[in-house]
Image (cartoon, rainbow over all chains, first blue to last red; front, side, top):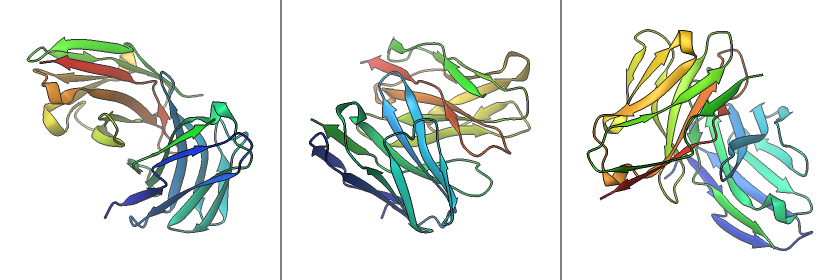
Length: 112
Length: 113
């Protein structure tokens, strides 16, 4: 089983719909992150969480929200999806020393 | 703020050619440095990392990187690439007391058989 699991792997949704991307981990890490990847832009941080009661905005949080349901679960929501949110989304975890990320396999989201 | 630049957007090489991908960062303090690889359709995987000590770091699959503090650089190298090295490569920087990593925009490597 993967250390960091993302669901769904692929999703096509319509503009204006609400969608949730889920991430769960078995690494036992406290820190969890959501990134989006766009061609030529690398990975940009959306939200991050250092523990269940700690949620922080990243550089591109507008239009997104998150929920840290447990140490092992961190979900990303798009309240009203728009086409420029079409991207590859990655969840990642790290330990408190932040000495490396473990990435999930990604969710490819298409908003039409 | 921290930033990471990667010199090349797309590099095309023939098999057995030598590879060097450039990475520069802007941050004046102590940093941790990473190279990640993303094979087509897959997630990012750690190639190698530098925290301290010997500035020449060896990673998986024959890759190595050299940290040159005076140049704020962490270039990735491989003496002889293979077709299976075709992927996108990301440099990343993390300052030990900061919360998250900053990634470069990535360099796409295409190795021709």
